Image 1: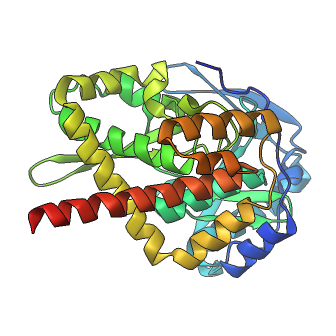
Image 2: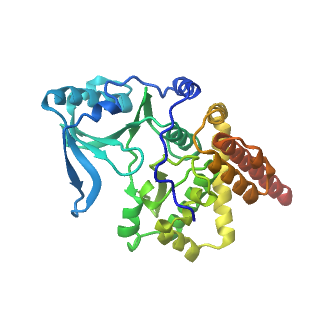
Length: 353
């Protein structure tokens, strides 16, 4: 399998994307931008509870900037969580700002603490990257998860997505006695299907989280992507299928253990049906989004040519060969899903008559 591109470029936002973001309430003026946080003057490595290097640095700023940054960052948190209601700010303070030098986006992570009860939350400050924003929007529309973020100029503010990081879940939770292997395997099939249809790449275990919800009889699992940098960028089809990453093998093996090909096909159909319903309920929004993508450049010519050839072969459809860019490929993929899902349901209904 081809490897993921290690140096994916940051793609600037085109005017039409900014117009889209403004129309759907994603543009928001904020008091601190990404470049402002690069002015830290000291840092220390951040270790987890077991003493392992997290690859994040806790950063420190000049004393004369700390008061301003505390107010500004808590103001951003209020904008993100309460639409700017500043009455909550008096109870909040910035406990820590972390910086990650690993990967492409080099984000800042801000830890906000509530004075009253020591409860804490996070948000992220990143460089605005159009391909990542398309990924966030597609996740918001097509998945069962709502995504909260804001864009200002060249800065992207993202809400923290809670859950157990996939790599930690595989290492620490996969052998628990109360693990519902069948439900977890089913959710991975659905997650795999969502990623492939909307062309979200690089879903190795450390790029998603597992959200565990206990119910009165069973435990439910939701796998949620947390890294959208590789939205519609790579050329090889397999890079959009989480099942092919070796880091995910322990969960894939659960599927092999508990599922037949017919069961997998059933779960895939279920997820495609749900995505088709979400598209129907947000048809104007998804059309605006993919039409904007089709005017944008978020990959390289060679990768586009490779992917459209591989998708055409996979789906046995020449429509993919006519695509000019990644936006066209996402649009064609979604249309193919809707058509094939409609045809399947029509066939099933005719057989039941």
